[in-house]
Length: 452
Image (tube, rainbow, N blue to C red):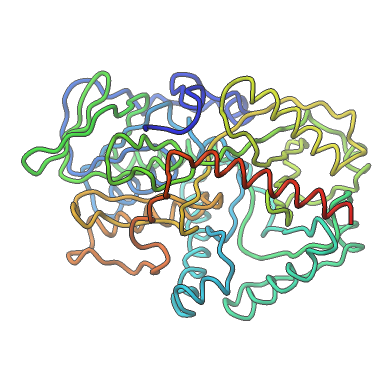
């Protein structure tokens, strides 16, 4: 089993028809296809934020001979097509679950690293003057139902109490005025770290910065075979090959599980779907009193995430598609449009101009996995960001560069929550059926909650 979804999800030759692709027109001139046989010290598989961050920091901080291989054009995968939220944390575990499993000290280090990731993302934007339509300050979590209020308040209190993260609870009436009105707004928690951005624009600027520091990035260079002989890895593409002493696996939701047995059965890629409206007038935004540019997630188990964009469009996303074929895409767009209009009923006549999808990744232990293989320390990896990857990935890529070049013992200052391969999923061939069951359960749960 190489990949879980319909082959349409893995068409590396075709750019996804996203809003980001349309407005960013990423320049690919610095990222030629790998042609012929080449060698390097470190080879990176995957041209998303994790891979680019690894290559960037290896080249910048260690003058390392590094090459990166991306299956599509640079920005093809989820890093270039997500909603552009920089937010925390990259786990589905509660604070109490983290405390119980990893201890209070390691959990505090984990949250500290999450904030460091946001700061690092901002530093890169500033250092290289990347114009990525940055907007908003912090993030909002909105209570979608009265029963969610107490849990969100407790979440904000715990973030302040344990991790010194600034938060503020905002009553429904106040959020009606400073945030938005909707059928699923019963108050919101604001938390300090984070912002929104155009992820494709950031990725393009980030990739060019890595190139300028000496990293060689190759687009449209899908690795189809991975061999190891005499202490060297050989990555084979359609038009060439790359020989390296060390390899970084940074493919996350688009991982070909047949490429290396160590990474098989360890991820649950989930399709996340986004719609974007036409450009709207201020008068139309006033119909829902939508004021803020701060990115928003709500408290649903199958969450809705949305934001008003600087271009005066609305972005709205959720999970749901579990097939990946073109027919399911049409159904998902219709379903999401219905959800969007249900939350914002005064926008029933606002046209939807864009729909696309991409993968996020959950692991069996619900935390990111970073490190090197125990049975082959020359192979490094980072994956599984629980949909909060824009800032976590740049942090993890930097840590991988330290593992590769700055550590003789194979250890860096990395919180225990990240360390090591995630456990394999039992009955891995049934992962999608398990996901379908979970999605159906939560939809039933939410429907019954609304009827109470």
